[in-house]
Length: 255
Image 1 (cartoon, rainbow, N blue to C red):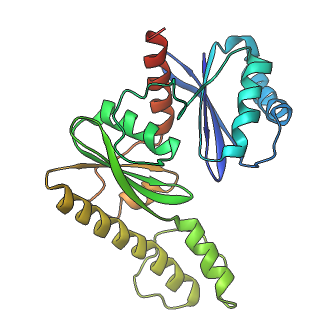
Image 2 (image 1 turned 90 degrees about the horizontal axis):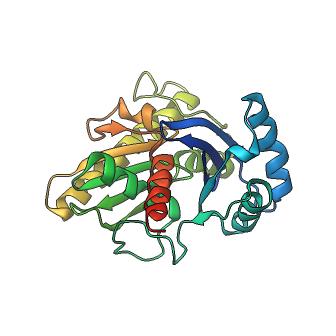
Image 3 (image 1 turned 90 degrees about the vertical axis):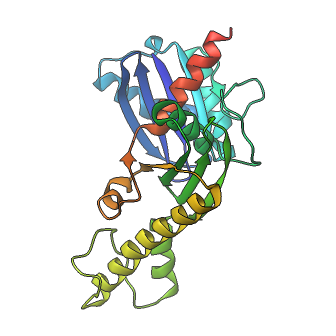
């Protein structure tokens, strides 16, 4: 099995994959100084619950946007799974697509690989993560750039921290746009504000690109916003993990 690791700013996702797809998926909060041993103590217990053994893992691939997590994750693979992981962004790792932008996060490139392979054509990939990102892939599959805006939960936390009387709230679709109290007013502002953000940015991307584009969404809140706008054409929660497997398979073929 392949161990695919996606280390984001909020969570680190570990996925065990076979030829049939994702078999198991677990996540742990991102902590920069977490050690390889700590990862393994947590991971081995989850594997045992599924009657899995470390020797069943034959390969690994890592995408991280948190640099301090890279070494312990590499050490985890080497020490406990006896394999050298591929690392997205390393010079020797072939993504299979052209990258026509600088300093692009590993997860955004992986999403571009998967989206082009699965959906084809020119694309906008909307990822609801710690940041809300819009990534643009052209007809040939090249990554050409994107947009980064504050994530929804980050915006909510900033609102709570900056305004003394505004509470922490959960993201959900309110019944009305006009809130009759503080909490529904906040929910409306965040929810419909982000719908407006999505529609506005996607519209401007399409106008600038000058050709039809599909819009694919991923990330934890993608489904919640999919129902509110016709801009998003499909939701794919496994996009990053699928991309990691594609890149791993491509590089295995080159050996």
